[in-house]
Each structure stands twice: as structure tokens, then as C-alpha cells.
Amino acid sequence: MPPSPQSLTHAATASADSAAWADIVQQLGAEIAGPLSQALERIHTLIATGQIDRQSLRALREGVSQAREAGMMGQQLARLASGKLRLSKERLQLTQMLRGVLAHRSREALARGIQIRQMLKPADVLGDGALLFALLNALLDWALACTHSSVDFRLDLSPWPARARLSCRFAHRSLDLVDEPQEEDLPAAVNSLAWRLLEQTALTMGLQPLREHEAGITELTLEFPHTLLDEPGAPQPEPAEGWGMPDAREFANSSNSKPLAGSHLLIVSPRRELRGQIQDAVRHMGLIIDVVNTMAEAQHFCMEGLPHAVIFESSQRGSELEALKTGIVRDVADFCFIEVQDSAQLTQLSSATADGMARIARSSLAEALPAMLLFELSKSL
Image 1 (cartoon, one colour):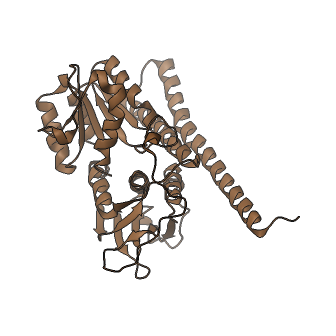
Image 2 (cartoon, rainbow, N blue to C red):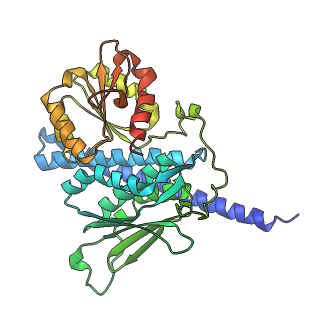
Image 3 (cartoon, one colour):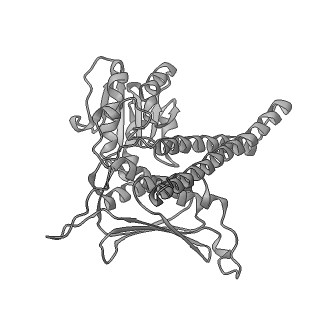
């Protein structure tokens, strides 16, 4: 019996998906191996000569950082490729979430000398909050890495059917070259692993990314089919087939359900044992983790870009913490600070403390820290 047209279509789609993921795996290997190979050469030079200049040291650090970022993106891509994600369905304030992400990343853009411009109309959509948060951060990661100009974000509604339409526009080559008659090939950054992560996150959410390039300008448009309208009697979209509310148990130690995957945590403690205990407690959550010894180092770290949360031990309280908090809250009002206390005090969420900082006993880290982070960081989703 010959195969049906439907089965042939499914087979063709599966084959195309397999080819796409094979390309992604190959690209992942290249983006990890390339920077690490260059870093290894500099290490060999250091071993041979016993010295390294500041420029080479900076290049070494940047190479390791690039490889690390590629590895982190690989982890997020693996999560999307698993096919086991169960997307939640909830009303999301797309405009508010985008503004929050842009505010959170404003220091990073400023440090790179990149201006972010935004024209955002109010829009609510139906979707998974964690994935939308990941999508907006992936979009900004890609744009900041590619742009040779400012980055323009626009959010409006299509005429009919009314759908939220998010566009991101930037120059992918130097503005000095835009007037040249012949268009050059696209820079590698435009099709980098950051793009792959953005693309696959969008596809997982049921969005079709539309990318256009003309005269040195790149514009990406994402149209949200499940846009919620507030007008009386306005038709509301049906949930996408197969969507379901996730079981709370799936937020435990599952490799396929990590609602905070890709979020960035900064640990501030001079004690290696405590830092290790914190890292062990959240190891299953897919977080990006950085560690510094003191609050002064944390201030320097945050100058070029904010993490999503700072967790610190009580000994770091003082004027430097207050200065750090004041500066961060000016940009991100609901930023997450968590204090780790050696005493056996009760765990307190930020909503229950006078200074807006969450607190947790060191003895409760393994049991309570993942849930606390989920609550505190979800406030910004």
C-alpha cells in the first residue's frame, strides 16, 4: 500500500527538522571550538614565554567567554529540541515585558555604545511567560551582537486580523558602507548561534520569524497570532492545539522543564564552600552563574550589564550593598536581591521584608532556594 500524502508530508517535515538540527549542532561545535582554539594558542604562548601582555590577556578572557556563551546557548537549544516542553497558556503583557527586558539590559547596551529606541503600543498575548522572556532576551542578544548602529524596536497591531507585531531593526554593517552600490554578504553574526536560538525559540512558541535584509539594514518581524483584545465583543483567539498548563512537579529537577533557563545569577561571597552550596542548589535550573568575592567586585561586574538576580551572604551588607542596590533599582525597580544568612531564621520573600530583599537560611538552600528564585524572578516575567 503506497504511503498517503499526509504521511509523506510528515516525513518531509521530520527530515527538514533533522537537517536543521544537524546544522545547529555543527554550528555549535564551531562556535565553541573556534574561540577555545585561539585561547589555547595564547596559553601555549604564556607557558613558553612565562609572560602575557594585557591585550593578549583580554583576548584570552574574551575567547573563553565566547565559548562559554555558546555552550549556554547550546543548553537552551537542547531544551527546545527535546520535544518535551509543555507550554503554559496565560495572558502576558507583551509591551510591559519588552520594556522590562530593555530596561534590564540598558547598561549592557550603554557599555557597548548602542542606543536602543522603542515605539511600543500596548499589546497582550496568550503564551508561555518563561519562553516569551527567553525570546525577548534572545532577540536583544542577537541584535546587540549584530548592529553597527542603534537598535529600533517597534510594537503595533496589524489591521485585520488584529495581531501584535514586533519588529527589530538595525544596520548589520557600518553606515559608511550603506551607500555602496553592491551589497556585501551578510556578516557571520547575523546567522550565528544567537540567531539559531532566537529562531528556534520563536518556532517553539508557534511564531514564524520573518527576516529581511536590504541596503545594509536587517529587520526581523514577529507576529503573535494569539493576541488578546480588550474591545467588548472582540473575538479572542483559541489556545494552540496541544498547549496545556504545566504540572507544578515539572518545575523540579527536570532537564526538559526549566522555566528560568538562561537567567543570570550573580553570587557574592568570599567563601568557596558557600558559593558551591548555592551553585549545587540551583544546578538543575539551567541558570547562567557568575561568582565574585566582594560587593565591590559586584559593583564593577554590574557596570557593564545586570544579572537577573544577586544572591549574597550577610557579611556583605553595608554601604557598598546599598550603593549597588540604589543604582540597580533606579533601572529595574523589582530587581531580585537574596541574602543568605548563617542563622536558622525563617525564609522570607521580598514581599514580606521592609527593604524588599528576600532572605534565606543557609541550611534551607537546597530545599527552598529554587522555589524562591522561581517566585522572585517570575515577578519580572
